[in-house]
Amino acid sequence: MRTDSPAGMPENPRWLWWAAGLMMANGTYALTVMGVLIAPLRHLWHLGAVPEALLASAALAGTVVGSLAAGLLSDRYGRRVVMLASAAVMLATTGLSAVWLAYPVLLGSRLVLGLGLGADFAVMLPYVGELAPRLTRGGLMVLVMWIGDLGQLLAYASGLAVSSVSDIRLVLAAGALLLLPTLALRWRLPESPLWGRRPPATIQQISRQLARPYRPALMRAAVPWFLHQITGQGLGVFLPLLLVALGSAHGDLASVEVKGLALVAAWFTIRLIDRWGRRPLQLWGFGLRAGALALLGVGAWVTGTVPPYWSLSLVAVALAAGAFGPDKTTVVLAAESLGTGVRTTGQGVCEALGRLGGALGVFFIGILLASHQLALGLLLMAAASGAGAWVTRRWAPETAGQSLPEAPAALPSPRTPRTACR
Image 1 (cartoon, one colour):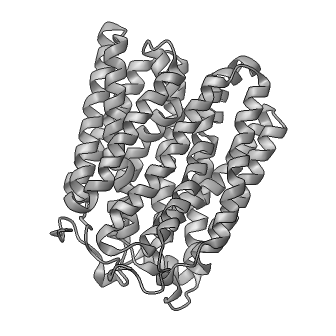
Image 2: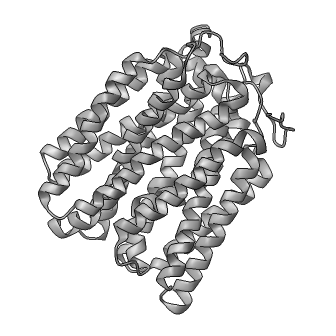
Image 3: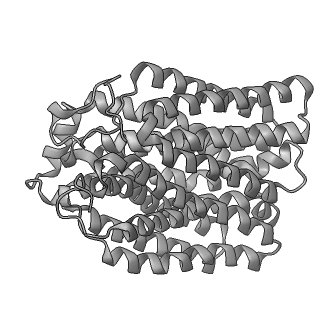
């Protein structure tokens, strides 16, 4: 076992990283699958622009509440119990939506599903960070998210087989079936040794500590996360529809191809995040995504259409840039910038603000796509990414190679020289 591993870690923890990644994959599948079902459900229920946008963004809205509550409860009662509860909520809601396929039921189940998803996303990555060795912590956290992205790829692939109501039920039921082995894996997870060494604290004490000494670090982590999720969820949920609107004849197949390229980009992040640092990757990722989306938006605005080859290439660049940078670094920086006693509470706040940005992005971009205002939607996402690059340059800290903070005095400050990881 590495000498920089936290005390109390299992001797051979490799299975933990893969188990955590598979758990994340369940969540990303459940979150993304609605994007491939929107088109068949539109024809089945004759949905208008607003009901369609509500259905697409319901789970994201639920994650706002789920991440806030779960982060606080995790710092109070432990990581493991919250992760078990979130899996149970996700299993119940995905099973219900598959059995009882009706618009009100699906909308309500997606909203409650978001509670479980928010809990999972708020607790899982801080938990992994607390168990990981210091010098490879960033790469292991990105590895877990990379495995999680496979769930999104599976969701896009499932859209290739949807042609009837029974297919819709099958795609929804697959999410519930995938969660069954996840529950078994979660029973085996140990409690975080860092959390276990903390003295007990009340919810009021946790909230007060986060609101005072950790407020600057919290804002530096939350604002880039919010700006990234506007485009991250907007592209993630509507990728098949976006590609069709840009001229691709097979949106689901093109989505699988584009997402595959993004996974390749994220694999490089696993290798580079502990060598280059979090801040440079985030800055370049935001900048490249803003440029690609701005070119697409201007092209669609001026000419009314973009050649399919160029549109597919620019969308691929936008997705790969996010996977290379802010899609991973915003989560890592938030988990590494806060003390153990408030880590998941702060992560929950960042997750909630990020998902709020994602819900707003999905809702408004969904309306713009349904209203045939493609160029405006692309330019909106480009502006959000450009703002993320500016905020990163001004405020983002560097946490590579540093120990996780245990007290407010250990907080990283902006532009702290990073410790090289060899």
